[in-house]
Length: 382
Image (tube, rainbow, N blue to C red; front, side, top):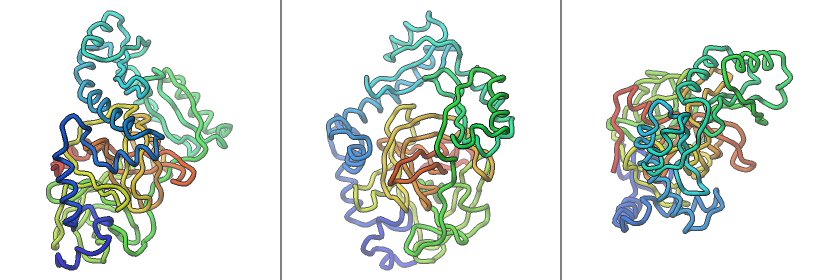
């Protein structure tokens, strides 16, 4: 593939790998020279947060700064809580990290670390054990997902409202409640993946499926596992060969990675699709529950929302996928595999969800660090 063929109008809005428009690179480099007092995020992230979260520019900047501090604090506060740790989350109203503890005697140490404290009944270890018992059950289609919710100090089971009276759903919920502290919530739709049929001029194809590139790694990129099986060929926007799926897992997991060759290369960039500035990727520190997060995908481009839950099991029609993170960000068909990013930190690749970007919905992603560890990959960072 020739470089001159790739650098063309609108191409930087179509590919995370394979090309990088000079203007986009200059803009991103210039953004890196801002004062360290400002949040490490592009103007595009600020704009998208204003649109999707209803914030002013100053509120979005202040929130990113607070979230970065909370992310850095989480490990220290968890250590301070010790065995009484009950989970943690970012509180957008206060701009601080909240840590749940079961032992009031640990509250002082957690506060001294800089976090707010809530005393709860169950530890995170206990709740994780309850979720593990639910993971061992076979869920009917009317059960959408389940996850540990540290704010509720419970395992939350989400069922499709129209199927809550189904005998199999009721049986699953009854068994779930026997496993430990469980709260039941409703959703209007069940989760589905966001792959799509082939449409001309999109980022990459495998077979007759269109998906989105996630994050560049040294030697390739990561994406969603349901987009293709190991060994499957991957083609670019122009039909030329990019590489092959080197590893893929779905269901149970939803991640994959593709090697890059044939004149294609990688860059540490999440695209803004021409409507917002492109964003450099500088790491993969995990954002806490409650933090803002944005997603880039080939169908609906750039949207933002909040992290709602972690370590959630999602019950797709193809089977359950575990250890997912749930967000309030919308997505649609073809966005699968695309990038979830918080500030300048990579978070994960889009798996699926429900709803759309007209009426809203929820979306899950597979955390990036799990994918890197699974395949021994190194994130390409700026």
